[in-house]
Image (cartoon, helix red, strand yellow):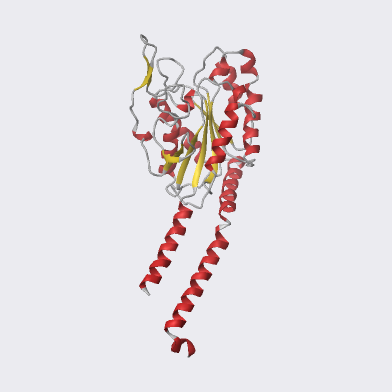
Length: 325
């Protein structure tokens, strides 16, 4: 009899672990400041860039934070997140790990976080157009993250535009191009209300920084939240954010995303209601999570039915007189 109940316990535990393993997936895309150059120092003599290997406390690994590596496998995330993705550059501290740790700290019931790094340094917005290499690679990675019921895409984290400050024509066309990029991502993921957290530039490679910044700050799109990196400390190169700045940015991005989801600091059933857009995003995330788990309901009902019938047959076999009465 004890073996029977042990079997039931094991089955229930396995089912619970299946539900628990659902990941909240975030796409990290853009160029070098998303990939992370915090702590990367260029040797003026040799021209070789090296990372100082200093990981801030806010960027430390966490068993609840995974990343999709270059082999499309889930592994425990650690800095530098883009080391095996942006392989032609030296990577350091970025906003991704801080973002994930801050979300988990502020929302204790959030569950597993799955990060999908896709950023590539020095890229222009035109290189992220649908159908081009960067876009295709990003979509390949995102779709791989969803295999075997891997989880739900919760948001796109986007930090790009420094390269588009070099040319006036690129700067002036930036808003149109990035707006289309956002819509294309949502369309290909079949998620028209996918939350997008965009970063407005802190720096740039050319003289047209303010034109690109105004384009970013002026985008009017449902469920888009823009955080401003202007004023955050830069590396000596005057282009890349320092590790300290990346910590601040990661928290800013996390706070922006958390406006779309239930608050864990008060009542978990109370949603932020700062604006209609954020309310709509909250509903879309809840519906997405609900739909993705609906298939579990008939499975669980079947499971309970089988267990009940099995127990009944077992009891009838070993207690025939009691059943007869």
